[in-house]
Length: 108
Image 1 (cartoon, one colour):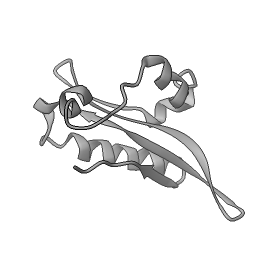
Image 2 (cartoon, one colour):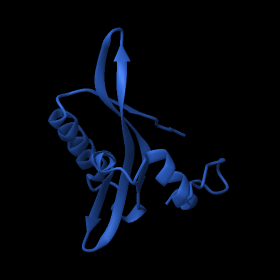
Image 3 (cartoon, helix red, strand yellow):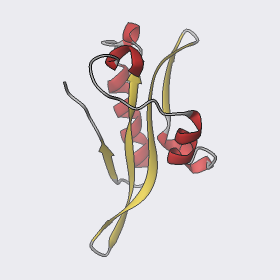
Image 4 (tube, rainbow, N blue to C red):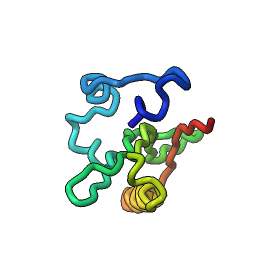
């Protein structure tokens, strides 16, 4: 998806499976709560990946997730996939007792 969207328009990383496994700690069962995927009729429509951490605010520590790597295949765009990801991400954070959700976005 990234290659199709950005090739020839801007520089972008092509993350390997090994890199994502390391960065997102995919071998940890706890990491699953921050990995979202949308499927439609057996086809992967999109993903929103992230990792859990503890965010310190003064003496307080709150659960947090840093999410990025949002990818939605073109044929599924405009069909509510991103809104569904956001709703599920919010619900999962609420299940952890609340916390912070950080994300990187690129507009251009």
